[in-house]
Image 1 (cartoon, one colour):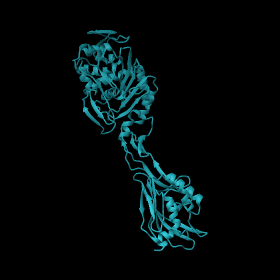
Image 2: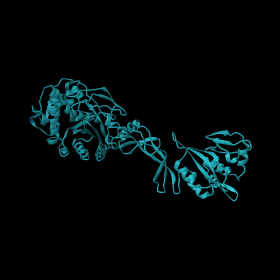
Image 3: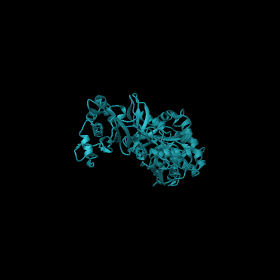
Image 4: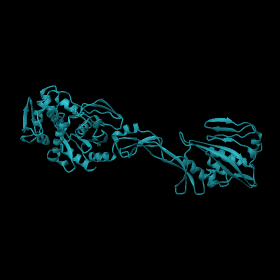
Length: 533
């Protein structure tokens, strides 16, 4: 076979040494060596720089080894070739590069052509192979590769280059389709480092890496003229969560604007979707929102009122005493400076009368509060994918005194901000609420049944009055808000937590301020949150 008709010489990417001898052509590629069959025609041709084959071989050997100096010197425009080669390798960043010399056509005077095939390994699952033709020219008796854009790719024209189009692909989106987690560089990362910090692990753990990747032919401005390999857009469908970026932003801004320790949890009552979970930097317990156990204070009067209504002890309009202080058993309760005398249940609820609700609790069966608390999900147990949660714990009272204390959210009752939000969501929806991050991502280990519609109707009226004329009038200009405030002593009783638990429309939420000593800041924070939506 003549040199001009020789085909199929393979040149490798990881080429370290090439020895062309009379007996063989040695190829090093990917760490291994392969000896081509002995061919005296090929050997003698390679030794003679006056043949077109030698120029094509020299260029492709250097190209496969990513040796810009040697490859450019094998062309008739070394400076231009070196710049183009270095820029292309930098843009495509191949992990491996191989070149194969195809048919070299017969010389036509001082010109000839040589076919080539190039394979770029651009990462796992991204192997790009294409073929083209090298122009060969002879000047002063020496053959060289004629430099042109087509030496890099057959479709490249003057002023054009190869470029990677790699974009972040949404792996997890919120309820409105806004990216929460993106796939980039073969891994997953938050779309916004500041968004949902408490849920970062849960969100990235549910996403699937799938990065959009393409090699494009672009003009001098970087405009895509043609996609040569891959896809600029991914076909991957992101996982959807019920979270809301807008709600989270409002919640985070509200807690960040408070100087003390602040937590806010928001849930959609109709679906159970967790909408937002925010804690400020002052909170030292990373799991405070999900499983922190705290005395709920007077927010627990939602439960006490429900138990009293269900037991037939009172109706919202029943007359009840609300003295400044009351001795119930061995416990003395106080209303912190106010005395309503004889009033109605709904008024006592709106003003948060401890003496009224302590007295009502004392008239309930020992398990009365525990049963009512269970109807609001406070004794429920859920396995939420990616989260560890604890709604609360309300056991039957061990004594009459404990029952009185439990009735005003002190005693031994414990609730997490998450559990308080579920309680509010249950009051709003009238059904058992299963909190969730994903549509099918929550297992109900211990479920619950809500109070009757008639009891909830009466309760909602009282919760509305808390805002219109009770302890949460700071929310009266934030729409039709229903809720209950709470102040709960802890430790030696010198300090107290502040709470607001409530809902507006299809949004239920709980505000917990650790050590706030008052519920008014919780009301103000709740108003700031709602007003931002």
